[in-house]
Amino acid sequence: MPDRPSTFFLLWSQTKYQNKIFFRNPMAAFFTLFFPLMIFVVFSLVFGNQEIGYLGVTTAQYYAPSMAVFAAVSATYTNLAVTTAYQRDRGILKRVRGTPLPPAVYLGGKIISAIMIAAMAVLIMMTIGVVFYGVQVYASTLASAAVTFIVGVASFAALGLLIAAVVSSGESATAVTNATLLPLSFFSGVFIVPSDDAPAWLDAVANFFPLKHFVEPFVAAFSPLTVGAGWDWGSLGYMVLWGVIAVVLAIRFFKWEAPVGRGGKSRRRKKDATVT
Amino acid sequence: MAVIEVQGLVKHYGEVEAVCGVDLSIDAGEVFALLGPNGAGKSTIVEILEGHRAKTSGSVSVLGYDPAKAGRSYRERIGIVLQETAVEEQLTVKEAIDVYGSMYPKRRKTGELIELVGLGEKTDSRIKALSGGQRRRLELALGIVGDPELVFLDEPTTGFDPSARRQAWSIVENLTSLGKTVLLTTHYMDEAQYLADRVAVIAKGQIVAEGTPDTLGGRETASTLITFQMSGHSIEGLPSNEVTLSENGRVTVRSMDPTGDLHRITGWAIERGVELAGLSVTRPSLEDIYLELIGEGTDA
Ligand SMILES: Nc1ncnc2c1ncn2[C@@H]1O[C@H](COP(=O)(O)OP(=O)(O)O)[C@@H](O)[C@H]1O
Ligand SMILES: [Mg+2]
Image 1 (cartoon, rainbow over the protein chains, first blue to last red):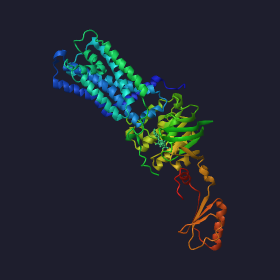
Image 2: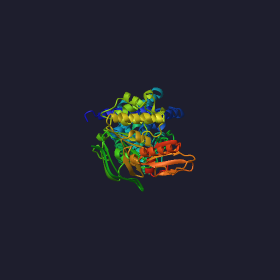
Image 3: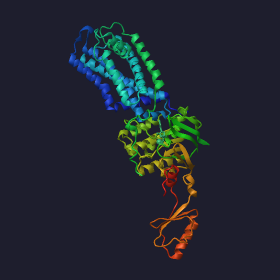
Image 4: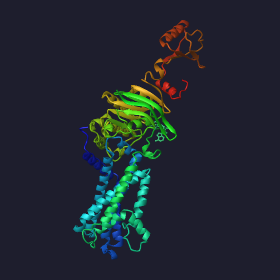
């Protein structure tokens, strides 16, 4: 086909329209962009923006990057899983599957859009931290912060699609993502500054899942105590591992059509309304 | 040349035998209707042809492709309107047509398409704000935005009011005039009769009759009914064999030679000075034939 649209053009138009859908969905935009920001502001108020003794950084210096990671993970993991599963329930994925758009381009557009939204959330969070809470940004660790971000959101986007692939409905996607992200955020140093008193098993759980490997190096990149450029190859490699496994499993289990009897009311058009 | 060629198509969902040995051959430029009640297996057949579902057995060829294995180049040539579907509600009508249109090598112009489906006033409305019928028309537009050679329409007008249905029909006529092949499913007899060149009546996963709307189920050779009201007269000597008289004096004559029979009956009546009140001559409607074919016939 000579006039076939180029992959690049398709990817870009898919990304743009996924962005549009996100920003026109006030609930998603609120929970992704403002909810983490609110927590950050509340923590800074409640704990006071002073130095956290044993960490040697201020409350804001810790929570701005940690809540930025939380926002980034919400934008990728939670949002991708939930919107994709709901779109499948409503028959939108099936519609897309019936077009010539290559499935990888459709999902690629979703991933790029999610990463763009994550980047925006992180920028907003860090900017507010810097402007209003005296958060310091260090040139020496910016590169490792950026790479940690990219590897982290890519892995969590893959995990989000994996959840979408294995759940049976949008409701269960919401349940699964919340039931995983929220507890892990507590264990992994997102909401609570990690202490040495935590039981070993909790440490083991946190170390097993990828969230800690995202938060820890990202927060470290904004700590004045970090020496050198802040590269944490172990964490990066571990996130890549999770991401690759998630991609493989997501491709293996992805469904374009909701299981029969699922898909909720929205898919059923009223047949009784017939006028003959 | 046949665009769609199906032989011995079978589809089981676990225990449910949804399609039990269907043969179809549909030529380029034809409008073909699968007519049948809910649960007959229409969507199953259509979705197998679209590549959305896997068949259990049989052979299927569409535009020379096996839809189960076909990919992008097949989907560039077909257009699909699913029975149950949705479009991203956050988009406007124009945005949806643009983004779906951008996926195809050929595409119909957004503005013209919006006019064609009668959504001109809704161009910049969010899909969320459209009525059910308007959404369905948008889905029709999305089904043909890639200027497909072959269009699948699964119950395109279910739930429409009569004027929306007329409009949808004119869209299909527009496709026909462009030489497209259309496979549509419906459970409305009048829709099949109006739109289709050929109709297959399907019940319980099997084709029970196939033909043009006029010949379907032997309609053109079926007996004509001549009925009239008689009061106080005997039907003695009425020149026809198949005469029935109901209790309220309604006479029904089943005729294979309506012209001759009518002549003889009116002659007989004039001779005796009898008035044939409410005289009518009717052919069995497609509906009568259809209900009989799908096994829900009532004695009319
Ligand atoms: N995905 C499915 N799983 C199980 N049974 C199905 C599925 N789809 C359809 N059926 C069953 O197959 C039969 C035919 O359904 P369908 O093809 O949708 O008929 P129609 O479109 O003519 O209403 C029905 O008995 C229906 O319940
Ligand atoms: Mg159906």
